Image (tube, rainbow, N blue to C red; front, side, top):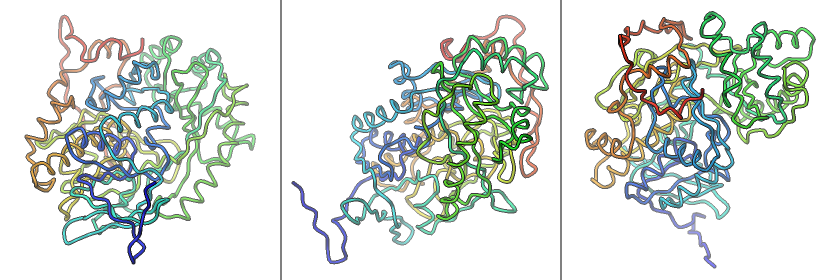
Length: 517
């Protein structure tokens, strides 16, 4: 049996690694895989007893752009393929607002994630809390952790902050921002829960009764709405954002008090299952322990009220059962670490192209209002995320990925979704490995070498993006191309017109099996 001995300061012997990743959500998981697969000794620290974070609780949205092209590939798509091959995920369900949805067995995914880390040779430390950051001049030398064995220093050549809250960078004195301009409020968070024993046919009939407006975004577009309603019985996964008349009825009856006016959620690929994304907390400060604790107390009480609401008011839920509550609050926004470049709302809405692109996104700007109900949405074009937005400003060796990347309140409302966070993870993990191998800081890594490495590993950097997927557009439908106002006065630019081929459309960029008929 190994015995640990502490020094006179009560510390365990330090652990040394080449690349340290803190946080094993979608971004951190893929960052650790990328760093290890590129030949570096990699340690992944996680405070939970499982890996995957929020990505192990939700349906994944946003692998595609709003032209139905895959903008996230590489390791994230590899994980999807393995889940699908095992029969533990559905097909991609293309969606004109959310780009695409992937419903998966989240518990199987947690098992697969551990397997992938083991295959790659990642050193995993679970139930391990980072309590401080070690800074030496312009370097973050490592972190201080607490775990069952005691207190320990972990020293690393490159540190990747995937904590979601930017804890490592913030404790190391790196600049950060939080919330929207003016009042600092972050997007409202949600604790998702899963309902079972749902009558799928009755639910679909309720959706097809347009007096209930199950998907509010479709309301102004009768042709698109008719196409959607006709397809519902044939698809296994579809997204909800509506049923406002039902919520109002419950409010008027004094049976619903949560700060929510719509039913938000996903009918998953499991026939009798629904993922509810309806709870909502206003005014959360995710970096304050009292605020966070009060949020959990509030949201658990909301779940019982929401369960009653679903059973009494929503078609198909009369005999629904509470099958699962997610183990963690879905915090949509927290600290954003300031990097060499701050990605803006205009960048993502207009589909800006960067010379130092290392990953892409295409999800709409989806702001869950910090001080009210429902969401504010602005459509996007496929956009680049530059490496400079993943390199922390003023320090030599910190990278970040996930919702703590260098971006504005508006931009992170698009980049925060799981597939795009995973793509960021592959970029920073690969960059960290190259930095270690070349003996340079991440900022000094050759962008062309990094891009070539990512492309060789299957990442999409526009090299195979192609033109809009006309076949999917015809089949699924698409919202009109027009500007929509977003929070804080951001207004989308008018996208350039894309000429439609006059004769035979080009082959679809996404294989047929990737959209649901």
